Length: 127
Image (cartoon, rainbow, N blue to C red):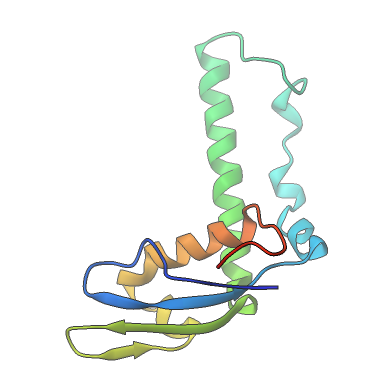
């Protein structure tokens, strides 16, 4: 399944779209490594009892999010099918993952792509 979209995070002065291949169930599972499982979480559904526990829980969640994004980022090229973005000031065409990956203006676009790869997707969803 593929999804074509205009990144909402495209900076001003850029236009275009990206096509990504959505991950299979097995690929999605592979994003969640043992590093994301923390045995100190306590009982599922149990609320933190004090400020220290709340702060620790926030740190664990931030660490998990960061590890998940790093995992997806390391495999992102496998899911990018097409890049067609133009920087309007000089008509430079971003046509590959490498173009996106090495341009600091494209960091928000890559973050959006990663979010789409790990986010909810239904077969038949509009592009």
